[in-house]
Image 1 (cartoon, helix red, strand yellow):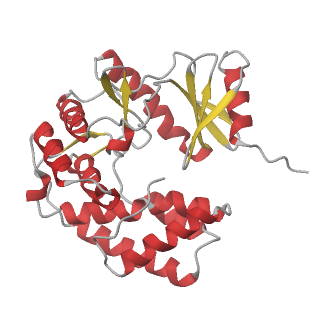
Image 2 (cartoon, rainbow, N blue to C red; image 1 turned 180 degrees about the vertical axis):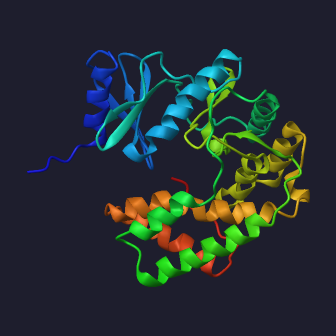
Length: 291
């Protein structure tokens, strides 16, 4: 008989391994990663698929270096980590309580990325940025997608990767966050920190900027984009490759919805269907749900 391990159980077992006291867990978030608050320690446990272990090792090493160099990254706990508990891997982070309905201004992310890109190369081996690799695996293994959608997603991915391969990147290549968008910024009292470093990589700097502009699908305003560009010191809207990166990001966001639909999440399946429909119709103005 095979026992199914829940993310919460994995978080409990990993906490013991890390030397943290037994305590209640409160679930804060569940999407691609399950996030729990260890209330007695004021620590966050992030539970990810075991396939992400190498990337999480990189994320912990990189953020430790960033914090030591006074960059406001979310801070990993000073315990041996990540902790594997099959089929998951767990990391532990300082908790930053967030006020309700008061997200950090979008412009702040522009300043954080400017500061990040201005740092010297970190003494951490970063993977090369390879767009849409994980999406291919997710589409190929999906039990939810029908053959028509699977074929369209594969064809669209190949077409975008061909366009990506022809781009020139005026900002050059270097260490990038890889998943930078305003939703990954957090208040730390009056300061703002940048979190969720699982996709840190070596790649074109434009990748870190484009995700914020793809956010027009979620209601991001022209004023917010102006503030972001001003804080970073470069307006990517003048670069012809922005469309390609935004469309790559559109496809990238489907991955977690496909995995959730595979697990029987009806709300995720409905949002996935809507997103694919708008993409197939080339509806660039369609608004997508958050979460």
